[in-house]
Amino acid sequence: MPAPKLHADRDPDFVYVIYIAASPQKIWDALTDNQTERAWWAHTRQDSTFQAGDPILYRRAGNIDISGEILEREEPNRLVYTFQSYGPGPQHDEGPSIVTYEIQANGNSTMLKVTHSNFPADSRTRKSIQNGWPAILSGLKTVLEGGKAPEYANWGEGEAKAAQARAAREKAAQQ
Amino acid sequence: MTGSKFVYITYTRTTPEKLWAALIEPEFTRRYWANTHQVSDWKPGSDWKIMIPDGRVGDAGKIIEIDPPRRLVLSWRNEFLPELKNEAPARVTYELEQQGDMVKFTLIQESDAPDSKLIDTMSNGWPVLLASLKSLLETGESLAATRSWPEGY
Image 1 (cartoon, rainbow over the protein chains, first blue to last red):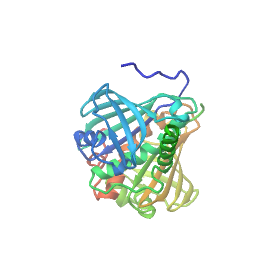
Image 2 (image 1 turned 30 degrees about the vertical axis):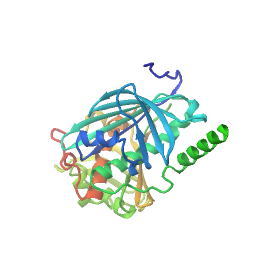
Image 3 (image 1 turned 60 degrees about the horizontal axis):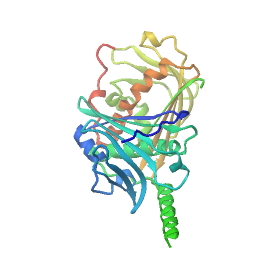
Image 4 (image 1 turned 135 degrees about the horizontal axis):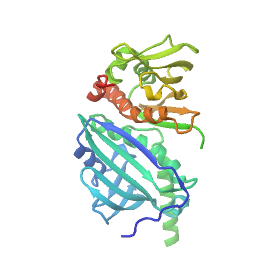
């Protein structure tokens, strides 16, 4: 499998560390859930086997939002995949970025570190994900510690609208 | 790039008033912030400090701006780690904003010094502290590792 092309002039990596009172396996299971529309992740369903080399799709309200490929899997400690807005559009044209999950037991809780890397300079994708990850990972912590998923105002509204518009364009192009 | 900056955002199911109290009131901070408490009259221009359980001052500074329960800006210098004593003071901003049934908490920590060791050290400490604060407000239990002052410090 070809490694994603690395941008020569890059925006800085986005790194987010959170500690959750749950086992590494529970966190792994939530992050690799391919059965449910996860309320804590803006009602996104993932379509993937999560095996290295296999594709991954994010679907929201039936529309594909993000596509990528699983690069590395080491259950329950590490998952690496590529992440690209589903085309067409300027975020898609930035090419695939790379998401890495690192999950490490830390006493009675577990550290989850998300590193999102390989953004071109002035990346639109980076501007979008730097708001998304804190909301998603805060919601994951709430849910795994026994709470209800947050219902953020305008949760993923921009992305959902963009996905709808893309689907409409594709349908029009087919007719 | 000049200066150093660290931004960290969490969302917690609580109210801005409760989160504000949890950030400054001793009975809350002792439970998730390594058994420390803060001393200040919380007025603009006043001194502010964090007390370590054994009586040492951990960090200290001044209240630059205070608008409960929305915004607090502190100047911040480390007092207990010898390697950080001579670092330029940092500026720490707390912003609290209700969003649905969650409160968005934004921590901004910045220094005019490039490659600030103070920012570097603090940015490693905030995530576990703020994760523990979120747990305390949402579940009534902080994360065990953050309840006492770390041995040897």
